[in-house]
Length: 397
Image 1 (cartoon, one colour):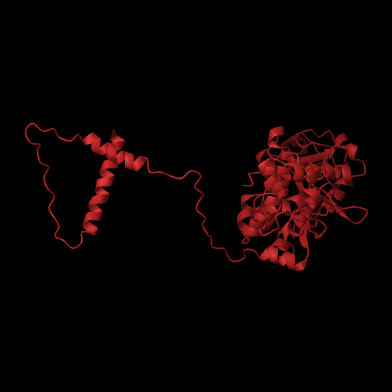
Image 2 (cartoon, rainbow, N blue to C red):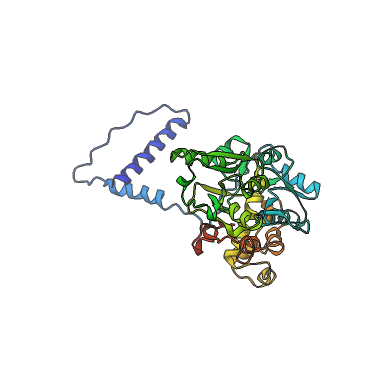
C-alpha cells in the first residue's frame, strides 16, 4: 500500500509541475479546497483512483525481445593502429623468451617451438589466416617491456607475470592468463636441502629484473633467513651458473624450473624442485595501452583456443564441425553465424583459422608441455574449469 501511495504522489507532483510550466498564459488558479460530499453521497474511494494509476504505470506494454540500445562509442586515439601496422607489414612481430624449452625455444631445425610460440602463431592465424606470418623476437627480461613500449614488437608472449605495478606503470596491458604458475626453488637432489630454512647463508641464482628476484627477497626476509643472491641477465647464464655449482639453489617460476631442468641441465634427474610455492605467477600476453581493438584481438584469440577445447573442436575435426555443428555458440565461433570477426576488424573465419592451423588449448599445451614431452608439466590449474582447473572462455555473444 505504501508503494501505491508513493506512485500516486509522484504522478501528481509531475502533473502539477507540467501544469505550471505549460499553463498556456492563463492566470494561475489557487488550489481549490476539497469539497465535502453532499449529504447522502458517498466519497470516491481513494483506492480506486490509485488502482487506475497503478495499472497505467505498471502495465505499460514492453515489446518482447527488445534489443539493447546501440551506442556509438568514440574511439580513442590509437584505436586500430596496431592492426593496420601489422597488416601493412605483412607479418606479426612477437616478443618471446627464446631460451625456455617448452615455452619458446629455437630448436635444432632453426624453428621456434613451444607453448608461448604457438600463441604467437595463433594471433597470426587470426589476423592473416596464416599462422606462419610471424617473426619471433627473442628478448631478455631487461628489454622485454621496452621493445613492446617502443613498438619493436606487436605483442609480448614471454612467460611474463601479471602484476598491478606492471599494469599501471609501464603503459602496457595484460590480456588474459594463459598459464597459472607459482615460484619455486630447485636444488641438487643430494644437497640435503628440503626446506627454505635449509638455505640459511646459502647462495641462490636468480634472474635480474624479475618478480622472482623481489619475491625471493620478501620470502627470505619474512622468514628471517640470510642469503646471497647471484643475479644474472638471462636464462642461460642463470642456469649455467647453477649447473657449475656456483649457487646452492636456483629460483624461478616452477614451469621454468621444470622445463630447464629437463631441457638444459646435463643430468636433470639429479635435481629436485622443493615442495613449496613462494608466490602466484599468472603468465600471459601483453600489449601496449591505447589500442583496444588490438587488445581485444589478442585476448579473444586466446579465448578461442579455450572455447574450442570446451566444445570439443580441434584442428583435426574443425572442418567436420563446421559442416555439421548445431550448437549456436560453435556456429558463431566458426563464423557460420553472426559477425564476430567483423567486430574485431578481422574476417569472419578468424577463429576457424586459429583452430585449424594451431589447435585448441589442449593441443597447444600437449604439443609442448604434455605427457610424453621432455618438458612435461601436469596441467593442474591450467585445466578447464569443468576438469578441476580455472580456465574458461567468456561467451562470444
